[in-house]
Image 1: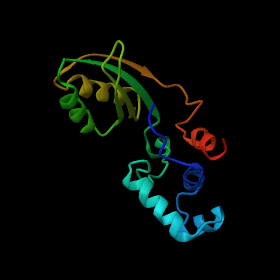
Image 2 (image 1 turned 60 degrees about the vertical axis):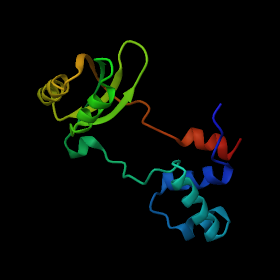
Image 3 (image 1 turned 90 degrees about the vertical axis):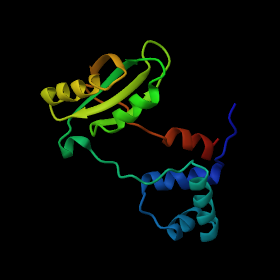
Length: 158
């Protein structure tokens, strides 16, 4: 089992920043009841250790014109995973790619403006050298959005 690299104070800090990513180090320290240097040192450690990867904004893709989300399972030629993943990363509408076990080799989350636009994106994906077959499903809704809160709360408040 992997070593846990986040303690309760780290988790509380991450929860604060998950809720309010624009909080200053000083405000985090005040809310957590610790010194400013403690918060800064923990942020530095979490960042350099790869736990905290950044503070991207949570953008509603529908509001910027990409109201359709789809997931594709790709079967690819053996030994071509890196090449295919690199080509997929060059497609703007491809949001995530995961290497998987099971029927397919890669699991891809992509967005589009419409069904016709999704067809264009799928055609672009299928044209990537090394992609043998795809199976695509359209997301109708997202009842559980991507989240980390329950995991951090389990660490912060065991």
